[in-house]
Length: 197
Image (cartoon, rainbow, N blue to C red; front, top):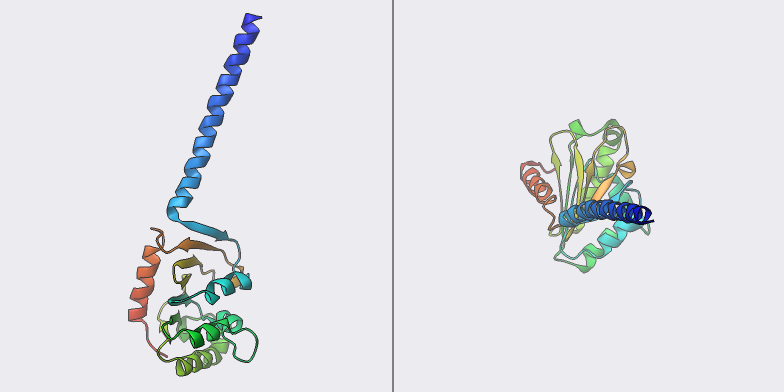
């Protein structure tokens, strides 16, 4: 009886130690994500309402680096439809700073090259209507990632050559994340090197 009892205590103790170790490992993983200030991991960037909510609350900066911003303009800056949340915030906030940094014609994918002049026309129209708030430039290299900053929120994700950006993943982070600082610096450096259309 004592042997059975001590065997049961030993098994229970071992089980408790293993459970504590697993809980510690799980806690360490969660703590690592908390330190990186990850708000959300997004498996696809096709949730228009997710971005619309962020954009509609923007008060200071909206900076985008991507392939073309074509889908963004169609989804959030189309004056001829109900999809114009960007135009709405540009109208009500004269301090807003909006920058689009996109691939030049030579480095844009073929489908974007086919619509390049139409996309440029739309960005030029925004620049004409909001010259103090909106600007766009072209970088001179192949796209590598997307960068989407709205005030203190930053979403970053890869660029896959044969996959639409809306079907690509992204990580939503707080601007104070150590992970984000290199993206901000990269955007700022690329902006300085980029050319106006």
